Length: 224
Image (cartoon, rainbow, N blue to C red):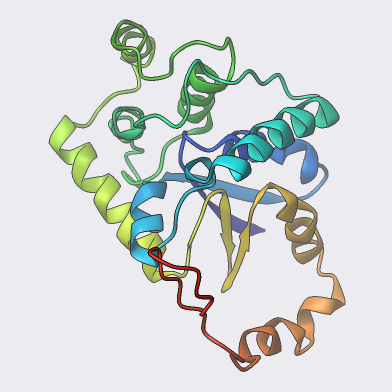
């Protein structure tokens, strides 16, 4: 039985879609999953990137795309009242519910509760009153102090970056990393032993030489 490490941040609608659709996408297969919250903005900073919601035309497309994907796959999804928002409180709340056997991972119920707090109902995700109600709902799951949860989030994010994770959702299996909601069919192919993964293509894809490196000057139009 293969084990999947599912990296997620509650700010990501694609992570929510992947979380909700995972049981259907992998239906009939034998596998286990650990859900590991990470700070997506920390990954973006590490790699020197902007998030999808920080580029105006991409932001509009992202929201249209996830709403279409949700109806396409039968997932109830409403855009929160504002987005992006600061997800740190949600991530730390999740990790205050860390598993006894693996404090950096949380169970599916905790993830589901927080994801649906954000992505269903169309309300403000970081509203303090709603956050209080959410914490109360998860009070029976909480076992770690806030400073421990904070440290675990930093640790999770650093370990994910070291493992090559650059975005969410991401799924690590064996020595393979799969990224994005649309990678779920590829993940299923790997878990079912599709011969393509036994060939050289996986490794050779990372060995393509870099032809040119683009340098963007914000004070002018030079590419590079």
